[in-house]
Image 1 (cartoon, rainbow, N blue to C red):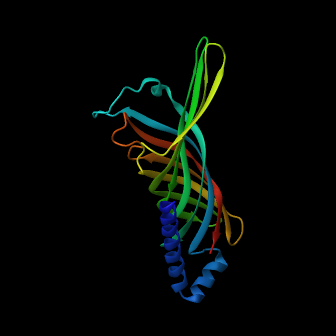
Image 2: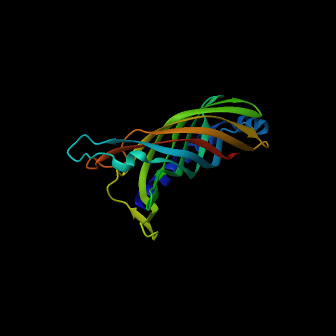
Image 3: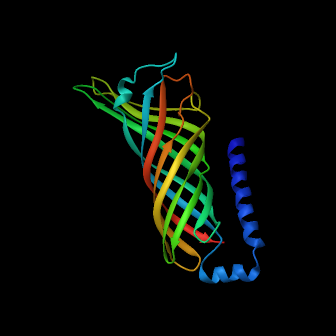
Length: 240
């Protein structure tokens, strides 16, 4: 909880800096920009849908082990949510910050002659995306971005069902906080568009690719796990 409060305070501090920069501009300049719908700072709310997957390899150290059935895991569709702001540096370039609930995972399913086994695994993070954006256009705008996402691990959860030879189903739901790196870092890339709905409000649809740079697990884990995701952000931004 302390980490969450710390990250949220960082978001508020960055947003305050952006607002103070906007406030320091001459009043007539700010008013002129607002009349044109070109706000120096925008606050946005988004939902992210992604096909999430992972690269899983054996840890070559002392604790390494073969992948076993985990080699057959497949992708998992997940929703994530966030809020943030974009502050224009120049006419076309901006820097972007925010805070989000970021989720990724994988799934597994096996069905034999008289047994079956399946599960989905979800990793949940509190994340703080930091990006540099390029914005081009007037009413319909092209938006491209690249940056990094520091992520604080919150929870691992695995939900599934085990069916024995008698057809008896045994559901399970496992959740833990131990055995995982407390922080991971991902690279993020975006290319999409946003449409001005009014002088102040914009709707955006921006595809996204994320690539985790370090392992989800600790060094003592049998595996090295790096998540990746491809999907899109959809939401609204409001000029401030």
